[in-house]
Structure formats: structure tokens, C-alpha cells
Image (cartoon, rainbow, N blue to C red; front, side):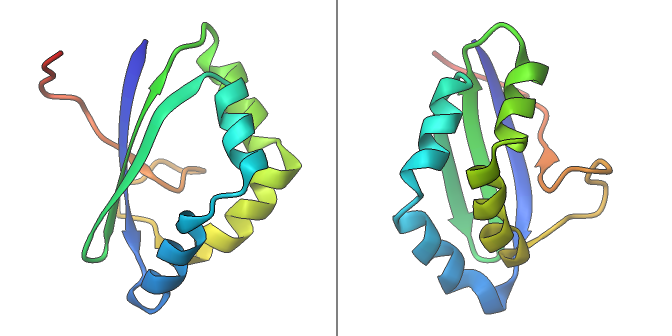
Length: 107
């Protein structure tokens, strides 16, 4: 199992829309993530910042992440959520969320 954290800005004018969307995440989006071995997926909000945490339990992260990214329903979901977000300086090219480096963990 691998742990991941990421951060992105939340546009103030889309704050409530983003929260509304996530009160009812589309079941097909959740199913795709589950099928691709993404578990314990959590998004936190503080002011105008979003923090995501998830665990990956599969064996081929690149292939599973590509399956999520290429899923038509997930891509449609992102057309609603991405405009609510603001990429942060230093976010890798082609990524929406900036990865975080794990510093400490307690089981």
C-alpha cells in the first residue's frame, strides 16, 4: 500500500459549488477509483485550499491512474470540478493537484 497527499487551491467563487458536488460524488466515479485500487480517498477543505489523501493498493500505479484519467465519466466529472480549483505554483505540468511529500506517519 502506498499513501499519497496532494493540494490544490479552491477558487472562492466556486467554494460552495465544489462542496455541493462532493456531497454527491457520482457512483461511477467512485466505482472507477475503487476498480483502480484507490482507497481511503479523502478530500479536506480549509478556506481556499483543498487537501487530498488516498491510498493505492494495486501493483501498477501508472496503469491504474491512466484508467481513471481515461474514463469518460471521470473526465466529465472533472469538467465540473476542475474549474473550481486553482493550480498552485510548482504543480507539475499536466497535473491539477500538487503532490505532497510524506514527512511522518503513525500506524
